[in-house]
Image (cartoon, rainbow, N blue to C red; front, side, top):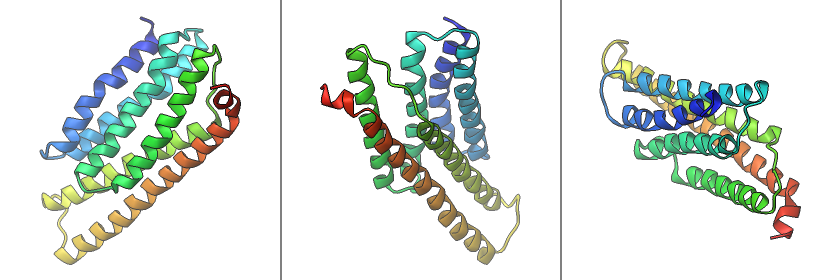
Length: 197
């Protein structure tokens, strides 16, 4: 197994640790989960670049890399539902987009065609990473206030809590809008695959 594929597998292996650190309440768990998520996201940037630069592109990498991305992001969103941070409707929209794109890729692969990623897919991924990190960062700030590491009055805490809630929802819904846009463009660009179905 080459280095890019090892990085992809590492990203998948980091997911259980990310989920555990996000859902299990221990001191600074939001910081730990955020650091794990950032580490996993960095492997996402590295594996593709290394594979192309060193001519190490493999069928396994083509399959596992987007799968690892989806597992990581969807895991975060599902955890946010469990924590009461996000709306299930948002996650359902993202899931529909991912299932649709994956289905088109599978059909294209069965026809011997390669469906290239477009810039909107990358914008969607970056917006999701930013949104997830923003949620964990704001949650960590509130955790520091809960632990009295940052000492504030209850009124100030409520203001921060309300402000962060609005900010988190904006980030999450913007990333969802980009997911929908990228999905629609993906379907339009690959109509021939669907028509040949």
